[in-house]
Image (cartoon, rainbow, N blue to C red; front, top):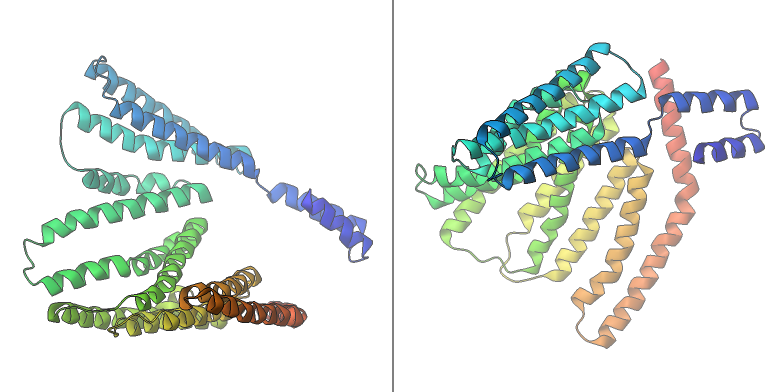
Length: 401
C-alpha cells in the first residue's frame, strides 16, 4: 500500500513514467516477503517450543517413561525428515523458505526440550547452565540451515543466555585456582564487559559472512548495540562516589590496562573485519570505541558524586553518536540521537537543581536550548539531505570506476 502511494506521487511529480512504475511494482512483489506470515510463523513455532518445555517440566507422572521417549524420538524424526525434504527441493519460493525457517526454529527448540526430557527421565542431574551449553553447541549445524532474521535473533538470545549462565558456573569453578581476589575480579570483569568483542569476531568469520549474511549482519549489529548501550551507562558512574580498598584499585588498574589493549586491538582490526565498509564507517567505529573507553576510564577516578559532569558527558557522548550516524549515512539514527539529546537537555535540570524555582528556571533555559537545537536541525535538513545525496552518488561513481 505504501509503495503504491509512493509510485503514484512519483508519477504525479513526473519523476517516473507508468512503465517504470509497473516494473518497480513487479520487482518489489517478487522480492518482498510477507512480514506477517514470517513473524506469526516464527512466534507460533516458538510457542510450540515453550509448550513442549512446559510439558516436560510437568513431569508426566502418569505416563510411562518409554512412551515419553518413544513419542519424543518419533516427533524428532518427523521434524528431521520434513526439514530434509524441504531443503532437498532447493526451492527459492517464499513458501518453501518460510517452511524451511519454521522447521529449523522448531527443531532448534525441540532439541532443548528433548534433552530436558532425557535428563528428567534418567535423573542425570546437572545444571541448567550445562544443559544450555550442550544445547547451544550441538544445535549450531541446525541453526546454520536457516536464513531468516527471526531465527538469528532467537539464536543470539539463546547464546547470550547460555554465555551468562555458564559464566556463573565458571565463577565457582575458577575460585578453586585463583586465590587473589583482584585477579578474580579482573577476569570476570573482562569476560562480561568485553563479551561484545567476542561476538563481533564471531560475526566476521569469512564463511559466515559469505554464506549467512543475515546472521552475521544481525550478530554484528546487536554486538555494536551492546557496546553503545554500555557506553551510555558509563556516565552513571559520575552519580556515585568511587571509593575502594587498595585491592579494588589494583583490580581497576589492571582491568583498564587489559581493556585498553583490547580496544586498541579491535580498532586496529576494524578495517580487516569490515573490509567491505567505507573508510567513513571505519572511522565512526573507531571514534565510538575510543570515546566509550575514555568515558569509562575517566569516570572511575573521583571520590564524590558529580551528576553535572555525568550529564554533560552523556550529552557529549550522544553528540559523538550523532556524528557517527552521519559518517555511516544513517539519517534515522541521526534523528534518534538528535531527539535523545533534546530530551536529555530537559531532564538534566531535574537531576541538577533542587528547588522548584531553580528547576523552573532550568527548564526554561533547557527549553530554549532545545528549541535552538530543533531550529538548527530544520535549518540544516536540506544541506544534510544534499550531503547524503552527494555521498551516495560519489559512492556509486567510485564503484563504477
